Image (tube, rainbow, N blue to C red; front, side, top):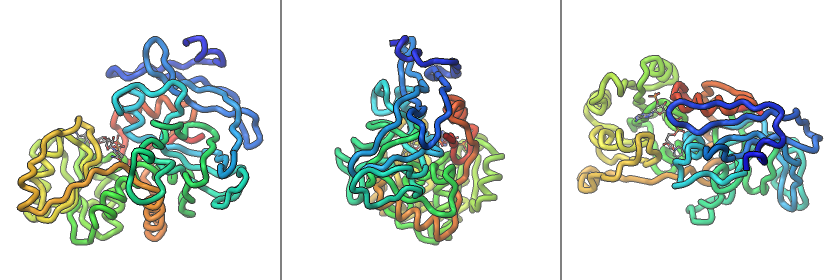
Length: 375
Ligand SMILES: NC(=O)c1ccc[n+]([C@@H]2O[C@H](COP(=O)([O-])OP(=O)(O)OC[C@H]3O[C@@H](n4cnc5c(N)ncnc54)[C@H](OP(=O)(O)O)[C@@H]3O)[C@@H](O)[C@H]2O)c1
């Protein structure tokens, strides 16, 4: 197996990460252009019993009927991508040969027969679930998650069914648009589709990662009052600049839910983007006002497995499990982003060769907002 992974190797960089993270291997190959016969992409591999990222040079794909070929210009990382690499997502190791990353944006460079939605030159992003167009999720849509169930975007080119793409907002760069498919759509659905956000809402955002910062930007744009927590005062200063109504350091203030409630004048928050899980959910519940909506999104500290169900009745709380969203949701979010001229917050941009360092950077939790890899 090891020989197979190294057969195209010209140089190997091995990055052993602190904290038991999987080893990452970057194997730079030749540069590719729009006409190149081959292209570079990362795949998951296993070396010395560790899941790794391996850069490979593969044949340029050819779009079939209803498919388009996209020259991917930028991708972005989500926490899920790190969890997949660490074999801590969905209960197992990623499939060998799978291309990582759900999120990416680029340009259509050729179209197959019968394509009607896109033309060469269109600027597009992949949708997270390549087969979830609208309506409810299903086993079928879940089985189409990029970078997990099916190949992802960390590839100089991808072939996609035309239905699995959206046009990106004109005012955004490829780097900015690449941040939207997972974190953006998740925050959008939590607040607007399921939460029915209004300007009367106090919104609780936990930490300053990708989902929370989109939640902050969307809440500010909608005229609501977002209250955001962080382990870093410097990040909270930045969150204020981005329009946060209130900020609380959850590390120096372990009873942070009381501070959040104080900021609301004891009314309590009415929207929660629950990304923290075990450490945060019980505290978020104590910061709740009446008629609140909790979007269950993540488990950064592991998943909480108890909720005070009885309290939901008296306070009229609603709870929704969110799993990103459909193409229709993505397009609705894009319309909002265009209307408000929002620009996603990118913390740092890495090159394709430095993709392993991007994963390492995410693991360090030094970022605010999104981490991007250009191709
Ligand atoms: N269900 C879905 O569809 C969906 C979609 C996207 C993400 N998610 C999940 O949502 C979570 C966040 O994802 P992400 O991509 O936004 O992550 P991310 O960008 O990696 O965010 C990490 C940040 O979260 C904060 N954080 C970490 N542990 C925390 C804790 N115990 N309490 C409060 N804040 C904490 C830290 O912010 P500070 O440095 O400011 O302290 C950290 O920098 C993950 O669990 C992810 O798997 C789910």
